[in-house]
Length: 153
Image 1 (cartoon, one colour):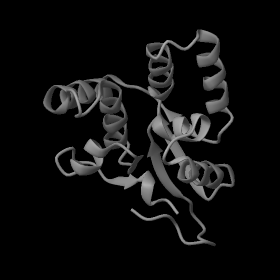
Image 2 (image 1 turned 90 degrees about the vertical axis):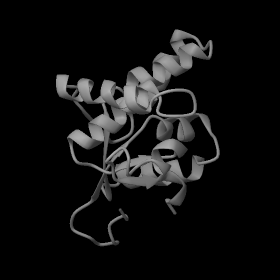
Image 3 (image 1 turned 90 degrees about the horizontal axis):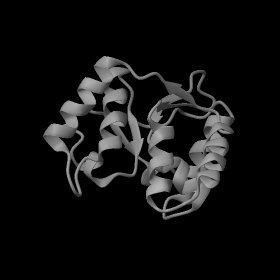
Image 4 (image 1 turned 120 degrees about the horizontal axis):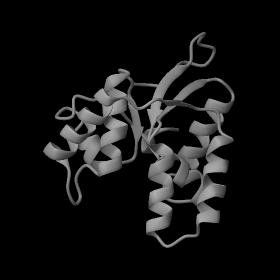
């Protein structure tokens, strides 16, 4: 899925995973692409959605890395400052996520939290904006439309 043309009357809509926020707020190989995505969302050119699990994903990752609860709280506050709409969790999404994780999960495959992002994108019929290699390579098997964060210019 490509971004909308400039001057388009309707913004492109994507569901983003947690890495978008990590790349922008903490740095990394796709920091400049993440900045462009978040600026496009803040200006209304892009309608950015997330799974409601994006916050738990970020907090859990930071705590697993030994970072303080205060830093995790600050990070979530920073995430909130960007224009995005978290989509609610449902029993159907949770079931789909667990099924996806059962079928495709494991080391260097679909992570537990990514299964929730994928299930949410599928449930709401949205393309997933991600940098995750497994998801990008296995989008067909996951029945998912994807957009690589790396290709965001």
